Each structure stands twice: as structure tokens, then as C-alpha cells.
Length: 158
Length: 104
Figure 1 (cartoon, rainbow over the protein chains, first blue to last red):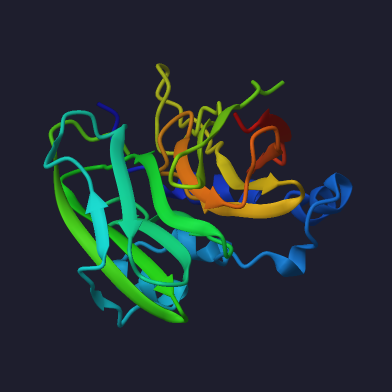
Figure 2 (figure 1 turned 135 degrees about the vertical axis):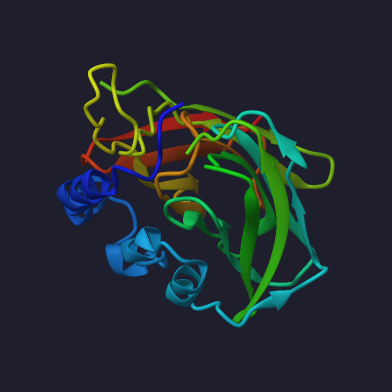
């Protein structure tokens, strides 16, 4: 198994090198929404190595656990490279959903923006480095809520 | 050249459109070493957007811990059979692509 944590400097350099390539120009070229309309997270949010920093970057550090969010993930994942995660909520006006894992080399895995008319339902597959908690941060009606679930990872796949 | 994404969109009885999509991408996390012990540079999708008749129905950003060939299922309302959807993604090298699907 490849080690995940000993080559961090290389990863960071690669991120720096690749980060700023012509995003805005491509938006314009494709005739998509202007960049100012993109309500995404700051790219820096993806670099944080502690949960508090990552939640802070997303604006949801004080979010409490909420039973109206259903987070489905396996109790045991034999392959950390492919962990199925489904998020569903009955909260009204869900605007954003973020998926994090609290023992990955970087905390934030994916951040989604849901316009009006899109149901609060997402199913995807993530990488987990080791046994840890999957945390879902949901922004609904301007407030943040969260749900978490521990997944035991038998072969890490960050 | 990148591989076309797969996207399947179906109008369900509940009145929503369920979209299943697979974006073919290596999603190298920048931490893996090749056989010679060299670090494989990070190479992953950073952003994607799905539009229905020109209106965004989902957009997102990825870090390095989304699985290879990102797979995603989501649901939106207001779509009809025959409507066109487009899926755009871009990676950290600036490569991008757009693929279309029709709601069935």
C-alpha cells in the first residue's frame, strides 16, 4: 500500500502549480455562468489538515448534529479508495453540502452547491486514508448543520 | 484527450429527474508513488457543473480524495423527457470537457 502522509511537500507543490490555470477564461469561452456567480468554496478550503480549520473555511464550525440529515456509509470499508457515501436531508432550502473525512491528509473532499429545485440528495464515492469519521456539513436556509458516521477502513485508499 | 463522461438522466414517478454520472478521470491525489518511487503529481478534477437547458442544477468542487472516475447521483425538479443536460468539468491542469445527455 502506498503511504499517504510522507510526501506532503510534493502534493502541495503540485497543487500550487496546477491551481491557477485559466479557470476564468474557460468559463468565458464556454459561455457558462460568469465566475462571480460561482458560489463555491475557496480552493484553500481543500488544503486544510485539521477539521476545525476546514469547517471554519466553509463557515460551519459551530454546526450541530442534526437528525434531519441522513448520512449513509458502510460500517466497514474494505477498500478505502472507493467508499460509497449518500447524503439525504429533509431540511428546507439546502444550499450547500460538503463532505469531509477527519483523518485524511486533507479534510475537505467535495463541496456541492445546490440551486433551488435541486433535491438535497447526493450519492458519491470517496477515498478514506484510514478508519475515521465521514462528516457532512449542510447549509440550509443560511444555517449550518452536520451529520457524521464512523467508517472502519481495512485498507486505506487515500 | 479525456474520455467522454457518462450521464444518464431519468424522469422518476416522484416528479424529479435522477441524474447518474461518471466523469472519467484518474484523480491522482499527488501522494502516490510510482514503481520507481517517484511521486505521481496531483491530477484531479477541481470543478464540475451540470446544466439543464442552460440553468445550473448542480455544481461542485473536488479535492484530492474523491475516488477515481468520480461517480455522482443527484436529483432535481423541473426537467421533462427530451430535455438536454450538459455536464462540464475542469481539472487542475486546466483540461476540461463538456458532455450532453437527454432526459428519458
